[in-house]
Image 1 (cartoon, one colour):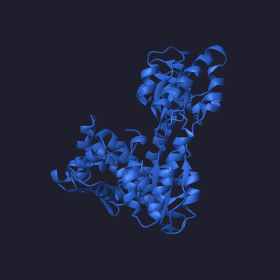
Image 2: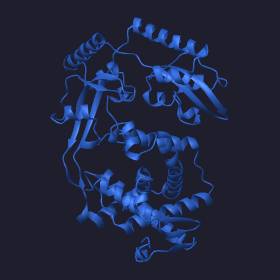
Image 3: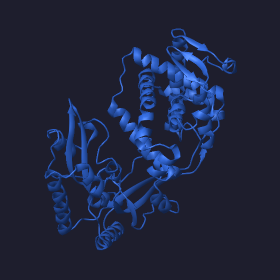
Image 4: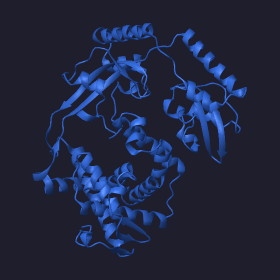
Amino acid sequence: MNFKNILSFVICFCCLNGVLSAQVLDQIIVVVGDDMIKQSDVDNQQMLMEQQGEKSDKCTIFREMVMQKFLIDQAKIDSIEVTAAEVNKEIDRRIATISGTKGGLAQLESFYGKSEFEIRNDWKPVIKDQLLAQKEQNSIIGEVEVSPNDVRLYYKEHHDSMPKIPTRYEYAQIVIKPEVSVEADKALRKKLEDIRQRAINGENFSKLAVLYSDDTESAKIGGLLGDYLSRAELVPEFAAVAFRLKEGEISRIVKTDFGYHIIQMIELKGEKAKLKHILLKPQITVAEMQKTFAKADSVRKAICDTFSFEQAAQKFSSDEKTNKNGGLYMNPYTGTSKFEEGMVEPTIWYTIKSMQVGDISEPFLSYDDKGSQVYKIIKLVSYSPEHSATLVEDYSDVKEMALEDKKERTLNQWMKNKMSQIFLSIKSEEYQSCDLKFE
C-alpha cells in the first residue's frame, strides 16, 4: 500500500464505528505511546473493506493504523491544530458522499441505527485524529520534489513493470443557463421577504427554515450551517452580510449564485460565527427551459457557421470556470484536464462516449456545479486509449509515480526514526510477526 492510502483505513473505519464493534472482541493488540489499537479496530476495518469489494490482510491494516498513531503523536508534539470548522466540514463532505451511496440521509441513519446528530458526534474525535495525521504527513512529505533525472532513473528501474495508463478523455464545454424572468425574480424576492417579516415578528426561524428553505440539508436542522464558520468558508456575498449581524439579528435578503438567502446570526466567537439561513432558489418554468434550449441550439449552429468552439465558449458560456480558456474543463480531483471514464459526470459521459476527437455535441440537458439545470454543448478535445506507460507519451504520469515513490520512501524513513523515539508494545501474539520495519 502506498503513502496515499495511509489514512484510508481509519477514514473508512469511522463509517462503521459503533456498528460492528459489538460483534468482535475488544482486546488491546498494541500500545503506541499513550494510545492503543484494539482488535475491534482492525476487524471493523477489514469487514468494511470486504463489503466494498476490497481485500487487505490484517497485518497491512495493523501497520497502517500504527503509522497513523505515530503521525498523531508527532502532530501533538509539533502543536498542529485542527479546528472544529475543519472537522465539521469534513464530516459534511463524508455524510454527503456516503448518503449518496446509501440512497439518502434517512437510509444512512437506518444503516447505522443512529440519528445524524449521533453519527456526527461519533465521528468527531475519529475525524479530528485523521486530519491531525494528515496535516503531520503533509509537513513531512509536502515539500518532496523530483527532478527530471529522478523521473528518468525511476522509469529505467521500473519500465518492465509500468502500470497501464487507463483510457482518458479531455473535453470542453459551453454552458447555457436559463434566465429567470423579471416577474419570477420579483415573486421569489417577495416570498422570501414575507418569510423574513414573519421571522422578525417572532415566528421561529428554524421552523420557517424547515418549511420553506430549498437548502434541504440545512433545513433538516432548522437552517443551521454546521458549527462555527469563518468568512473563508462562506461565499463572499453571504459572508459580507452575515458577519455584520448582531446575535439573534436577521439579515436583509442576500443574493448569491445559489439563490436568495436570509441569514440569522446565532453566535459570534471571534472570527467565526454560528449561522442559520433560509434559501429560496428560482424555479425555472418549462417555457424558460425551452427558450434556453433554443439559445443553446443557436449557439451550436453559430459554431458551425461563424465562431470556433473556443470563441463561442468565451462569448456565450455562463460557466466562469471554463469560458475564459475555450471551455476546457479541469478535473477537480487531479488538477489536470484529463478524465478517466468513472470521473466523467454521467450526462456528459453518455454524450462523449460515442464522439470522435473534434466532434461537437448537440445541446443536452445537464447540471451546473450548483445543482441547477442547464444545457451544455461538449467538444471532445482528446481521447487516449489504455496503454502501457512510456516516458515520452506519459511523462507527467511517470513523474507522478516517481514523486509518489520518493514520498513513500521519505515517510518510511521518518517512521523508522520515529520508532526509536516512541513506546510501542505489541500485546497480541497474532501481530508479533507483522512487518513494522518500514523499508
